[in-house]
Length: 299
Image 1: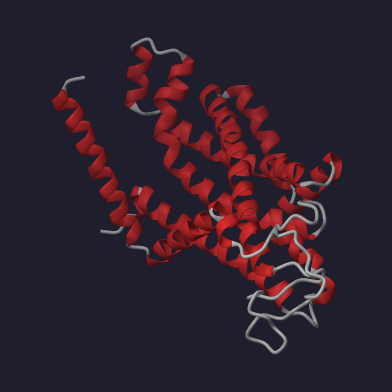
Image 2: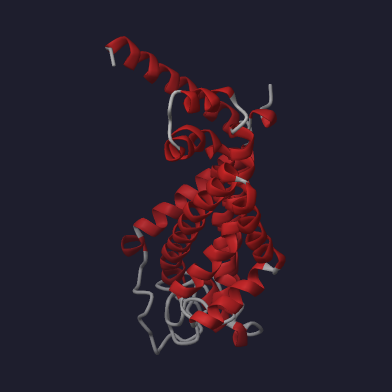
């Protein structure tokens, strides 16, 4: 490729990026969500530096201490301690690592599996499409959390099995979205031209069609990320996800159930962490949808 062509390609990419950011920042909530998500990522990455204590260290002389601004609180435990004397702030900070890890793993499994299934169904159609879509419909017929609970009960409680179960539950959403996008792109002239030029099925599927189907999948992945965090917290709360003493926010809520009335902080702060994270990711997903979908771009 010549230097002029490379410069032209770089200029087009910069223009596309600038256009994306222009439409994304029109949604103020999406910008706030992006800022909060970046803070969440930084918190997870630098958790060993930010956390004042080890999340597993128990201080027997500091059981159920309130936050520092309440009577009886201590400055060394800014958000108080739990029932066995562990620092709440440190456990919340390390919990961000679990949330990001769960979201990345679940979305990756569901995204790649759903893309492959949707590509096959939308490209080949016929009985292949019918069989795959009926299986996806069966999975979608069950409430997502209930199906995840059943799968975890079969696989056994634990964080790994919980992530696998949630990914299986989310896979049909990506498969159906990919299938619809592929069926729409198959009617385009560039696909016909590539086929006439001798492109094989694999090249048509993964090199020609798939790159033009990514915009809605990116939005769906963002929204599924927040749902994965929420569902993993729900499974942890029910004792089927991450197991104690892991500082996962849902597990922290489960451990704090019996102290709701006399130690509000052990329930409130993990709940706020889940609420803030899920809300921020959802708002960021709305902004991505506005920026990536031409029909929703505001003039």
